[in-house]
View (cartoon, rainbow, N blue to C red):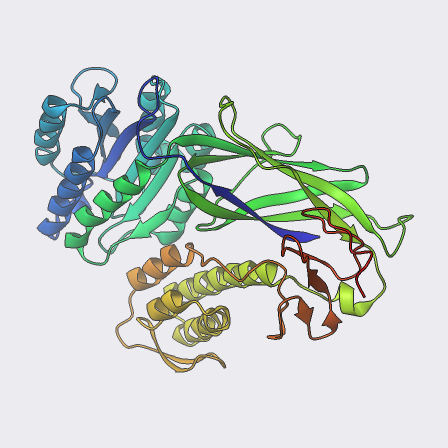
Length: 452
């Protein structure tokens, strides 16, 4: 059973909380030898780091890490992290402008040093803003897989690509594991502005952690819960009890794909049965007003009009996943020197983006292909397409669109219907969707006994 769980947080405010700063910030800047050309690249990275430093509120712990095949702290020049003030921000800017490029790339070393720095801080939200222009060529010195395991749950990381030598899937791997996002810039000059906007958004996040707990009934199991909006993020069951931790919330909505497994053997037909209960909690904050737990209901049936129904939200995010897979396959084909195969996969990506109404993704795909028929996926690869164009597309494909309203059908008909007939109905009290054969609304409990 698949369902989309929407979680909305309101009323957090953007001010600092009592008891000290919420955020501790590490800026990890690639200073490998590839950053020396063109010269504008390192300059843009320095300007971006400065833009982020200037946005830090007074009292915020922060540090700047210079990364190549090793990792060193260029600011502060004393052990640990500095506290943001007019004096420390000015000193950090001078240290950033004094960085020089040289050496190789070992991203694991950068993240490991960031983890050790943040472990010494008591701010509830640790954040790493990582920038790279190259592939992780010295992974054997500190394997990224091992470092990500050690860093998971310790801080949030947003990973950015600049230049033309970085690996989009590598950035996605880091961001998804560390509850962040992967992004990139085509023009070096755009990076400082992007960093400033990212910091502005980050500083509105005053809820460091929110827990989603899915409690399965006997005979049911949780297969997975993963974030699908606004970006794809891996979630793991923290202690084997259906407890999934999400991080860094402001006033926002996120959506999660929940998959449950259940055996219908011996279960009654033609009535609603509860498979699981989903609930949210903010650990350590009794002032938060929590919503009531939501039941996950199943209705075992032999009616194909009901069993053949796919919720429009589930279908939307599954299509988005297939879009990402098509882009990754096109990237592999291009790398192997197979332009025809790359073109076919990009055509499939265009077809999926068109079906979802994802105009931004279509616009990005149009940089790589001429779109002759979006509905049929007929495209032509543009001359001069290079590897970095595909990697820009990979990072962009990790940002999903919101999707349709819950409970709508997939056949283009009215809300609550499918091609096979009525599958969901709208509750007249709360307007949420419910199975067509349900005797009560699973959201508000309103009885459907009087319904014709």
